[in-house]
Image (tube, rainbow, N blue to C red):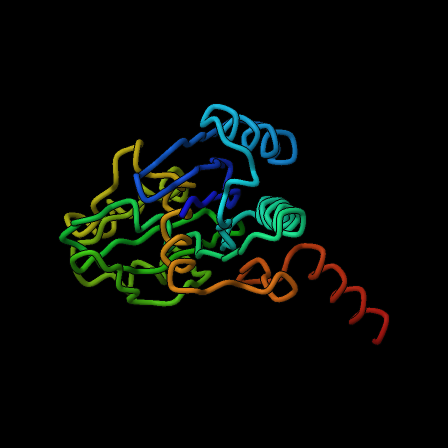
Length: 234
């Protein structure tokens, strides 16, 4: 089964093609350009360089968050559009779960953290057991202090949240905080593809109408609408 993985959860976005033979192609960009500008060209390049067409792809997997509100909308709408156009199966994958998947055989718990702005981070805890990834906590939007209070053993951290909070984690947790190297800190479209492929091989698929971004908290637009509603009702 050939699966396309799409990840636009953070600034580091990418597209990957994965089959039973392994990784066919993967393109990752972490540059100051919107996913609107680069996602479709990345998809086209991944297909062309692999010498295949979109019609030969058996299914699609897309990261559904948490992450950038705009990035998630772009990735999900693109994946849905490709699904409608091709009739292929589509599955959503947790961004944090896909990130933790990139550190197999890790002896310690893994905590992906994303900068959620406003003094918060998106995070979750996972542990690898053999070829299985065990979820230890649900995806959450927390203050860094709240996260620190939950770490009771040596833990590996990765994600773009380290650029902002890596120093604080080291200072507060000392030897309990292990920071992943730069090459393993970002998201991975191939991890999204692999986790999605596992679901697809089990016969699972998500309904397009029900698949939605996992924001974990209201967007700025929603907060403004709520504020306007409260003010107009007062």
